[in-house]
Length: 117
Length: 108
Image (cartoon, rainbow over all chains, first blue to last red; front, side, top):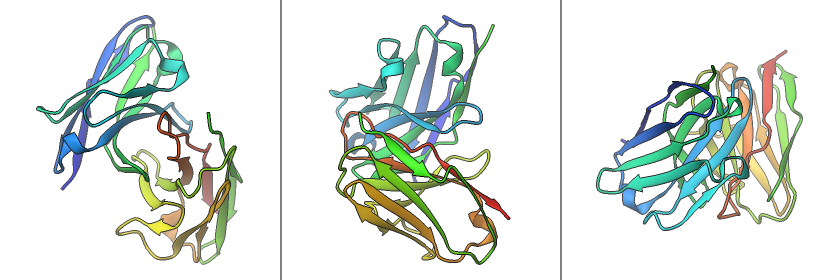
């Protein structure tokens, strides 16, 4: 059974940093693109970043470029999102997803990140 | 960047109704269009991929159609468990897979 479990969410002050992790199991992690998607309270889904299976290609939505870094450790079946210079509008539930050519077929339960003083 | 526009943004319908939601891309995306269902407090669930292919386990009352820039999601006979928010998403671009703004389907 495919499972994605996020961790690392919490409350952080504006300007602070947080690192999200996603533990993957039940599939060959090193064969798949992986993605982070977020959802602000009461809002729609926003694609944030993705990373190629070997980690050598990464893409970001403009609003997080230069502040967020996506990475992966295929030996540990883990995906990460390092978030720096956090702002109030980064407050959201962050989902880890398994991606392929036709969408995101598995999603984690989400990790809540709250940026507030 | 590709922009995805869904309509309507909200919709009221009754159990048994046939419902259609549309999604338009700002440029051609071939058939790289996916539909998701999200219920409150839950992660989204992939319903349809490649415009018209039903994800495993999804009831056959859900169907998708379209290609190029215009796509539709149809629910042939609404069931109580179908009341949720639906999102389209393009997966044509490597650099970003943009979502539509969502359509909230409510009980009339």
